[in-house]
Length: 162
Image (cartoon, rainbow, N blue to C red; front, side, top):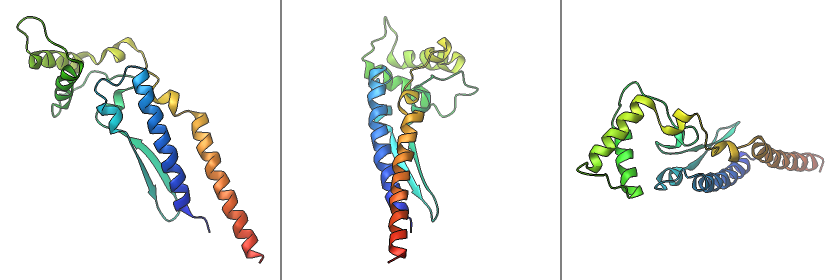
């Protein structure tokens, strides 16, 4: 009988490997200002009686790493402003003149809400996840799982004839 826990183990191991590659890609593309978004990446595996799944999730900025973000319809809970204020500190930015860091964060946040991020405005991509999670990497994981399933089926057949 197929041991789904072994397949889950393969998915966990390969997911962990992909997270390391994604983190390295974030550094090499300049998408790692404070490191918090890359450190927020985690692998989640799920197993039911008949299926195994794996996903990679991350913090608030993860969804925007590759293409930036467009304008927003409403401010929401202020998370963008808080993230921008932290980014200013992380980057060591000192505003000119009498402007405070809070005022600068407010202006940047307002611009993002009105127009989106520069990456989005320029229509550029960082190619973070598209260079790591490729058809080839997915196929390699599927091949490994297929090999595991084939070995278990072969063992089951041999044991059935004993």
